[in-house]
Image (cartoon, rainbow, N blue to C red; front, side, top):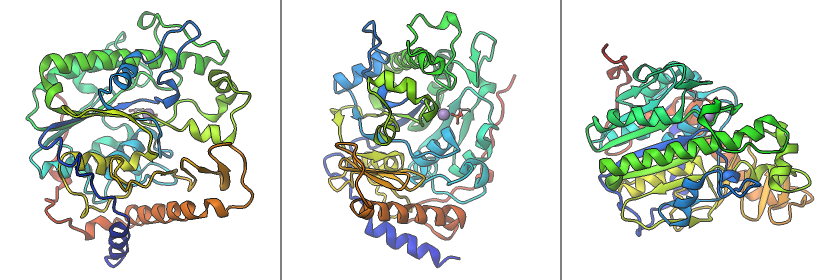
Length: 423
Ligand code: GP9
Ligand code: MN
């Protein structure tokens, strides 16, 4: 009942990472644009093929030129809901479900999500995706999140040559999105969900001249080609954003949604990483996904702090000059001076610079060695368990319907309708 929300509020108050005054409001009033980079893992960044070619030369250039904040110890926190779980984490600062997809099972809940918060600040919101709107129940869940518009496959040229696997290829996706984006009222909050780098990563031959890997594992070998194609598509999108002028007043957030290469491919991944075997701590390390935040007029750089997808929402809201103290979100602002410097996983394990918990066992994150007993890991493991429990309380009991953040204008999901374009 409504008394449960009091526990949540108390937890939130006790675990709030206050905004960094150096960055708070630095992006006030700017447009916001997220790019979900399908299945992109951090090992691909700055990785070179045997012939010396970079897999993601464009993303690498952003790191090299301090064009964006690049978080190299950032982890996905998704469960079975994959892409949709990542969307949920990024836009609510809450964790997805231990089983099943929150987008499918809890779309009737009340949320105070990123699009809704920004709507109250004068923003218009839209999601762009080259797959059909019912996938992951997005057409229902997006209403609960407060999306004004959803440009799904019906808005794109879904021809044979433009599509592969789950839907539209990334290059036509970004090209065809540009006029739609330009037509939006500003400031906007937008999200672009890419698709080309999706398991099993097979490309049409005409779309790539990049070399495949040579591990002998088809999935891993093709991954490099698909990731390279996505990198090219993102570069083209950045060029279009620059040409349109939007680049100068838009915060761009790019994140890997979840792993693309599962543990089933550990043998090949050992070859990729040049190690004898993928140990438990190396496997946790492979759950790193890239996070880039570009803020016009703000110098970026490599960020080493540990964090996860639930940490992004407060980071971005604080950059926009919006206080988050009253929002029932979890995680910890990545740019805050009191950022907590660890990330939990949906199964209760966690990772920090010093220690890692894998399937309940405690390891050194420096040597990878097993630490006898669980005492060394207990402090963070307990915090992770509490945070997951608080998140589950909110999601399973639909607690946000009993809570109204100060200054927040509630949205009504029934106000939104995502119609196909007129013929
Ligand atoms: C499908 C896309 C991919 O619309 O989001 O889904 P995934 O399998 O990665 O969750
Ligand atoms: Mn995905």
